[in-house]
Figure (cartoon, one colour):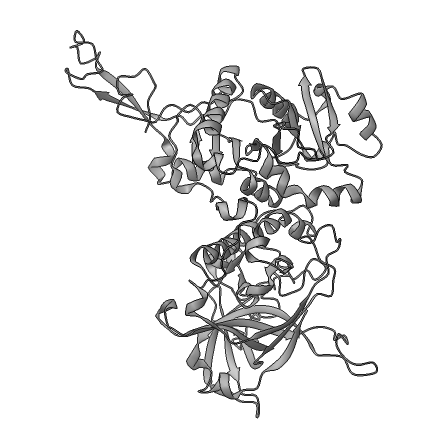
Length: 583
């Protein structure tokens, strides 16, 4: 609900009409005023100011109206403010910096008219904000130099964290579209409102009811119980791309150009420029100060530490469902976020998980496609493809799964207990300059835990999302009272029903209990969660002596949840633990 600033109802309705003409000079001037108010008045934003922080190695100097050029800063702290750009490439970049044209871009510069429309618009916004320097990845990173890419990507967290403001292009699917064109119309409903004759906002002579009629506007979205903010964020192009998440989270403030208006998002709040209605309940979460401020340390197990660990899981859930043009980008595109979390959750970052919390971090489960989640598996369904990408990350890492994941979450470690021990976890970064980036093939995780043989089968058609495990005794082979665990496999390949047959299709797997909730606080029951593993296709002598036999290797294929009583009494104390190597 909103009205215009000069309407008689304005003193009583805070919301104003949204601004659709986001490229108009007066609108950009209004945006500048909002940014300056944030800089001077918002205590939460002033607390993380980094005005003396090192500059990025390169910036785009757009101080000249008809010529832009690349400058090198050598990382100095010259007190310059700069603007960072967050946008969707949408394909190969028509103008980019390479080893062949770097010298020309620095000395001769470029005519802004030859640049893609999104970059032209970003230059215009930076100039309107009174900031002549821009950081744009396609121009400030030498795109055909692996050495330059790795060096610049390693400092990506500082680029967005230290930027005075980030331009978030949430409305463009490619760099050629631009974002300063007029926004989409909403066609709000107009509701007349008659004010009383003695209303203090009206002149005394206005006793005519028609003269006292105010206009109130309602968005159609509210009729469908979809809030304005949900619509805005759901339509954001940058909210769908993997690379853009770290740019959103690490920026201290952003001008967000959405399909409907322009917003200022900062540490204090998110507001629509011009005062249009905004529902802050659905704002994207912000990183806590303990992550953004340097040299902050938290005691492991404290409430603040637990909240940050849970936030990491929430970030993984969001990030894993985003789009990547290349599978190998999955770890490198969130490396800046991991680097920021390392002082609190580290040391020891292994392929998207933290060494100190591995039993909990291993408990992710893949999500089913929407159609399967809605109707359940049916007879004749084609098996889902193999979705573990071993060349990107080990099978036990969420980064190997080509879809969104969800975490089994415990309120805190005090109410739970680990029933497995991490002996070794070894992964090798592809590049030492990117310690939080992609890993080389061959990463192994060695656990000391119970290895429980099981049989896995689908439930009846129409029961979607879960499978059943039958726990089998170690010897002789028999089902233990046909007790079952609720399981979720990363892929249903090989487990679909065969046409004309009601027989279950079994898969022989093993269950590895990892974490149990001994207090019964979770779900009101004593539960245990763990991994489902299968034999790897090949066994390699990772730790065998020279001339000896190879170690049996396992790969993760899913997770399970069950009750303590599923395992016979004394299982965790009587069953010997063995060393299990996961690849």
